[in-house]
Amino acid sequence: MIELIVVIGIFTSLLFISIPSYLTIRENVALKNESFEITSALRKAQNDAIVSKSGKKHGVRFAADGMSFSVFEESGPTIVEHRFVKGIKIYEGAGTEVVFNRLTGQTASATITVGLSSGKQKDIMIDETGKILVNDQ
Image (cartoon, rainbow, N blue to C red; front, side, top):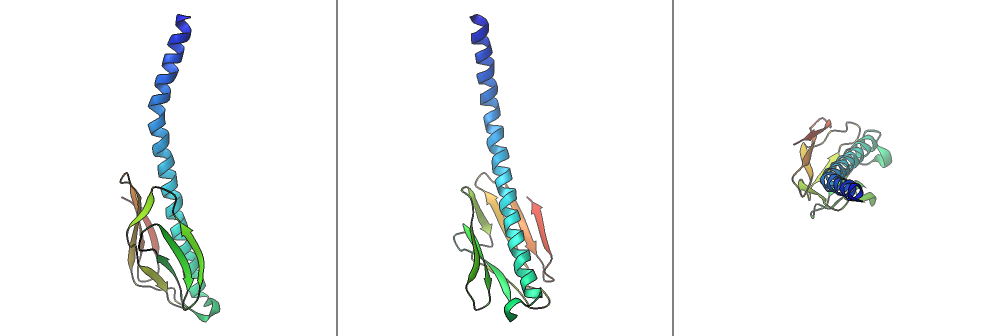
């Protein structure tokens, strides 16, 4: 009986040690997925602008509350809207639009910082030529 209590105590201790690690891994994966969603949306808008889809500019609009973004066509409706998972928001670049020029895919440079409330963040940088980079902070 004593052995069973010791084994249950060890198992419980290991469980309490591993839970914070699991939650951290889960948050990091969510941040990585959301930054991938942003870069994918930026690249889609850029590609649509380069091929001059519908003869218009295309872009990505980041909501002022920092909780979502949408892909749009100039003077047209929103094509795709994406809300971030709980705990992730835009800390820099909320309320901005990244609009890609037709045929060239160029845009004004911008930095979008997306992150967790715990402090881990990723910078998504777009330069004037349309190059998109993702950096961890």
